[in-house]
Image 1 (cartoon, rainbow, N blue to C red):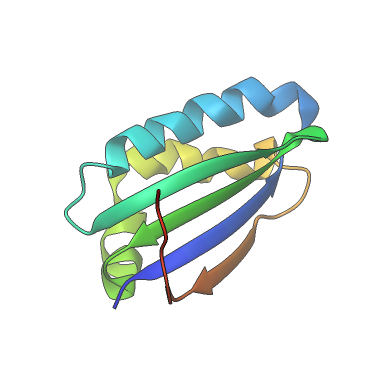
Image 2 (cartoon, helix red, strand yellow):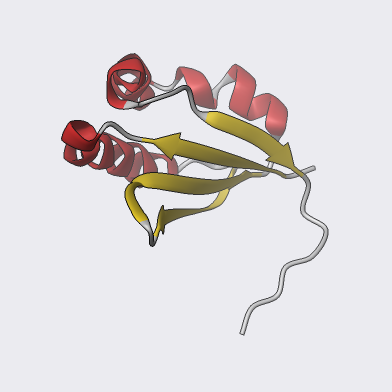
Length: 101
């Protein structure tokens, strides 16, 4: 069963560009993974340092056992404590319905 992770980030103002550079590298790499479904990055229109990431994968077990250990994530995970004002807010959701135009 697929799972969507909703991840909130509050980035230190001086680290915004580094945060986006590292995150874009991870997003560019993970889109080629077999169990990847989609990802959407949002920015708070009232705060340029707050971001929300929706990340959907086909298999939660694969994310935990394989995807989180991918080498392209190492620098990203190591940098997060230095980039963020506070720890990420992570929640998991199951898709019930998708509508597209």
